[in-house]
Image (cartoon, rainbow, N blue to C red; front, side, top):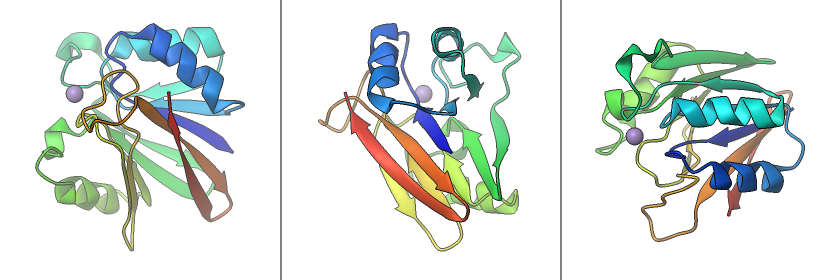
Length: 158
Ligand SMILES: [Mn+2]
Protein backbone atom coordinates (compact mmCIF):
# COMPACT_ATOMS: atom_id res chain seq x y z
CA UNK A 1 0.00 0.00 0.00
CA UNK A 2 1.39 3.38 -1.04
CA UNK A 3 -0.11 6.40 0.64
CA UNK A 4 0.71 9.83 -0.78
CA UNK A 5 1.06 12.52 1.88
CA UNK A 6 1.02 16.23 1.16
CA UNK A 7 0.24 19.43 3.00
CA UNK A 8 0.16 23.20 2.74
CA UNK A 9 -0.33 23.46 -1.01
CA UNK A 10 -1.98 26.88 -0.47
CA UNK A 11 -3.78 26.95 -3.80
CA UNK A 12 -0.82 25.94 -5.95
CA UNK A 13 -2.46 23.29 -8.12
CA UNK A 14 0.58 23.18 -10.42
CA UNK A 15 2.60 21.92 -7.45
CA UNK A 16 -0.14 19.40 -6.69
CA UNK A 17 0.05 18.18 -10.31
CA UNK A 18 3.84 17.85 -10.10
CA UNK A 19 3.58 15.85 -6.85
CA UNK A 20 1.04 13.48 -8.40
CA UNK A 21 3.42 12.93 -11.31
CA UNK A 22 6.47 12.32 -9.08
CA UNK A 23 4.64 10.06 -6.61
CA UNK A 24 3.86 7.41 -9.20
CA UNK A 25 1.17 4.89 -8.40
CA UNK A 26 -0.42 5.49 -5.00
CA UNK A 27 -3.52 3.89 -3.48
CA UNK A 28 -4.79 7.01 -1.72
CA UNK A 29 -3.69 10.47 -0.60
CA UNK A 30 -3.67 12.25 2.75
CA UNK A 31 -3.76 16.06 2.69
CA UNK A 32 -2.95 17.67 6.05
CA UNK A 33 -4.71 20.98 5.41
CA UNK A 34 -4.28 24.40 3.80
CA UNK A 35 -6.24 24.27 1.57
CA UNK A 36 -9.35 22.10 1.47
CA UNK A 37 -9.86 23.17 -2.18
CA UNK A 38 -6.50 21.61 -3.08
CA UNK A 39 -7.53 18.30 -1.50
CA UNK A 40 -10.69 18.45 -3.58
CA UNK A 41 -8.61 19.19 -6.67
CA UNK A 42 -6.34 16.24 -5.84
CA UNK A 43 -9.35 13.91 -5.59
CA UNK A 44 -10.74 15.22 -8.85
CA UNK A 45 -7.59 14.83 -10.94
CA UNK A 46 -6.34 11.53 -9.48
CA UNK A 47 -9.64 9.72 -8.99
CA UNK A 48 -8.10 8.32 -5.77
CA UNK A 49 -9.56 8.50 -2.30
CA UNK A 50 -8.30 11.66 -0.58
CA UNK A 51 -8.57 12.01 3.17
CA UNK A 52 -8.04 15.57 4.36
CA UNK A 53 -8.37 17.84 7.37
CA UNK A 54 -8.84 21.58 7.72
CA UNK A 55 -5.85 23.85 8.29
CA UNK A 56 -5.68 27.26 9.95
CA UNK A 57 -6.08 28.95 6.55
CA UNK A 58 -9.26 26.99 5.83
CA UNK A 59 -12.67 28.31 6.83
CA UNK A 60 -13.80 26.85 10.17
CA UNK A 61 -17.30 26.56 8.67
CA UNK A 62 -16.14 24.23 5.88
CA UNK A 63 -17.46 21.14 7.65
CA UNK A 64 -14.08 19.44 7.19
CA UNK A 65 -12.74 17.82 10.35
CA UNK A 66 -9.69 19.17 12.21
CA UNK A 67 -8.42 15.65 12.84
CA UNK A 68 -9.11 12.18 11.50
CA UNK A 69 -7.96 8.70 12.47
CA UNK A 70 -7.25 6.70 9.31
CA UNK A 71 -6.96 2.92 9.59
CA UNK A 72 -4.76 1.19 7.05
CA UNK A 73 -4.18 -2.49 7.69
CA UNK A 74 -2.91 -2.82 11.25
CA UNK A 75 -1.92 0.86 11.35
CA UNK A 76 -3.75 3.87 12.70
CA UNK A 77 -2.74 7.21 11.24
CA UNK A 78 -3.62 10.38 13.15
CA UNK A 79 -4.04 13.15 10.55
CA UNK A 80 -4.25 16.77 11.68
CA UNK A 81 -2.88 20.11 10.47
CA UNK A 82 -1.02 20.69 13.73
CA UNK A 83 -1.73 24.32 14.66
CA UNK A 84 -4.09 23.12 17.41
CA UNK A 85 -1.17 21.21 18.96
CA UNK A 86 1.36 24.03 18.77
CA UNK A 87 3.64 22.22 16.33
CA UNK A 88 5.63 25.39 15.58
CA UNK A 89 6.91 25.11 19.16
CA UNK A 90 7.43 21.33 19.25
CA UNK A 91 5.62 18.11 18.39
CA UNK A 92 5.27 16.68 21.90
CA UNK A 93 1.54 17.54 22.25
CA UNK A 94 0.84 16.15 18.79
CA UNK A 95 2.70 12.93 19.58
CA UNK A 96 0.84 12.63 22.90
CA UNK A 97 -2.54 13.10 21.18
CA UNK A 98 -1.71 10.53 18.50
CA UNK A 99 -0.59 7.92 21.03
CA UNK A 100 -3.65 8.55 23.24
CA UNK A 101 -5.84 7.79 20.22
CA UNK A 102 -3.98 4.54 19.59
CA UNK A 103 -2.22 5.82 16.47
CA UNK A 104 1.21 4.50 15.52
CA UNK A 105 1.65 7.13 12.80
CA UNK A 106 0.93 10.86 13.00
CA UNK A 107 0.83 13.15 9.97
CA UNK A 108 0.80 16.94 10.29
CA UNK A 109 1.72 20.06 8.32
CA UNK A 110 1.53 23.77 9.16
CA UNK A 111 5.26 24.41 9.70
CA UNK A 112 6.16 23.95 6.00
CA UNK A 113 9.22 22.03 7.19
CA UNK A 114 9.60 18.31 6.48
CA UNK A 115 10.03 16.01 9.49
CA UNK A 116 10.44 12.25 9.87
CA UNK A 117 10.58 11.55 13.61
CA UNK A 118 10.53 7.85 14.46
CA UNK A 119 9.79 7.78 18.19
CA UNK A 120 9.41 4.53 20.07
CA UNK A 121 5.61 4.46 20.01
CA UNK A 122 4.69 6.65 17.05
CA UNK A 123 6.19 7.65 13.72
CA UNK A 124 5.53 11.39 13.29
CA UNK A 125 5.86 12.86 9.82
CA UNK A 126 5.41 16.24 8.20
CA UNK A 127 5.65 16.08 4.40
CA UNK A 128 6.73 19.73 4.24
CA UNK A 129 4.90 22.20 2.04
CA UNK A 130 4.31 21.16 -1.54
CA UNK A 131 4.28 24.85 -2.55
CA UNK A 132 5.94 27.12 0.04
CA UNK A 133 8.90 25.48 1.84
CA UNK A 134 10.30 27.45 4.79
CA UNK A 135 13.45 25.47 5.45
CA UNK A 136 15.39 26.70 2.43
CA UNK A 137 14.88 23.32 0.79
CA UNK A 138 12.72 22.44 -2.19
CA UNK A 139 8.95 22.00 -2.16
CA UNK A 140 8.22 18.55 -0.80
CA UNK A 141 5.80 15.75 -0.08
CA UNK A 142 6.07 12.12 1.06
CA UNK A 143 4.80 8.65 0.29
CA UNK A 144 4.22 6.07 3.04
CA UNK A 145 4.91 2.52 1.90
CA UNK A 146 2.96 0.26 4.22
CA UNK A 147 3.53 -3.49 4.08
CA UNK A 148 2.27 -5.37 7.11
CA UNK A 149 3.97 -3.90 10.17
CA UNK A 150 6.65 -2.23 8.07
CA UNK A 151 6.36 1.44 7.17
CA UNK A 152 8.89 3.08 4.89
CA UNK A 153 8.80 6.80 4.21
CA UNK A 154 9.84 8.20 0.83
CA UNK A 155 10.60 11.92 0.74
CA UNK A 156 10.17 13.65 -2.63
CA UNK A 157 11.31 17.11 -3.67
CA UNK A 158 9.64 18.94 -6.54
MN1 LIG B 1 -1.11 26.22 8.28
